Structure formats: C-alpha cells, structure tokens
Length: 110
Image 1 (cartoon, helix red, strand yellow):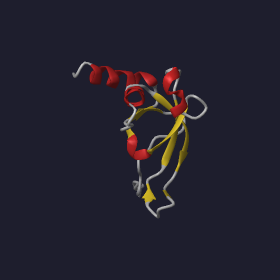
Image 2 (cartoon, helix red, strand yellow):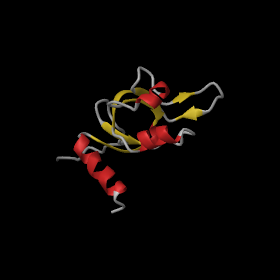
Image 3 (cartoon, one colour):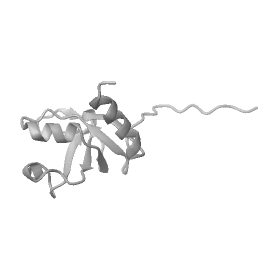
Image 4 (cartoon, helix red, strand yellow):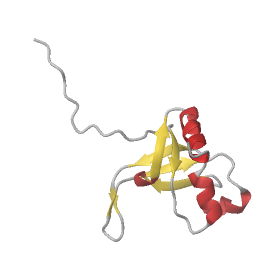
C-alpha cells in the first residue's frame, strides 16, 4: 500500500540567492525610498536569535543592493550591504523579474 508523506513544520522562507523587497521605516527619507523601492539579493541568512535585551528575534537576512546612491552609502556596510529581519521582507522570489512586476504594480497603484 502506498502512502503520502506529510510535510510537517514546513515554513516557506527565502533562501540565499533569492531576490527581495524590503520595507524599512528609516528616519532618513532617502534611505526608506531607496530600500522600499529597490530589489536586493539575499547573501546570508541567520535563524532565530535572542538579542542583548533578551527579546527573541525571528532571524535576519543580509541583503546586497546594486549601486545605492552615494549620499546613503554610509547607511550600508561595504557600501551596498545591510542586515534586515525576516519580518521586514515584503516579497521574495527566485528571479528579479518576478519582483520587478510587483514594483511596477506598486508604482502605478494597479
């Protein structure tokens, strides 16, 4: 008799190499505009951790951006990389084209 294997505790999370759209509430308007409207690429992922205030965090992703504006490069490390929590990810996909469509929809309020 055949059986179907159940996939328990399957959580769909992004993987290294995926492209992401991030939402941030930076006090610096130019940073928020850039990050919220630009596709980045995940270069590293860390799982859940407890911070120095004993708060549990869901995990973090390290995202690389192509050519951030010169005036906000100091906000990034290595001029184009930044760490975000998994909760800040709005969308992710295997290809950049998938997310470009979503950005276009957002831009034109479709």
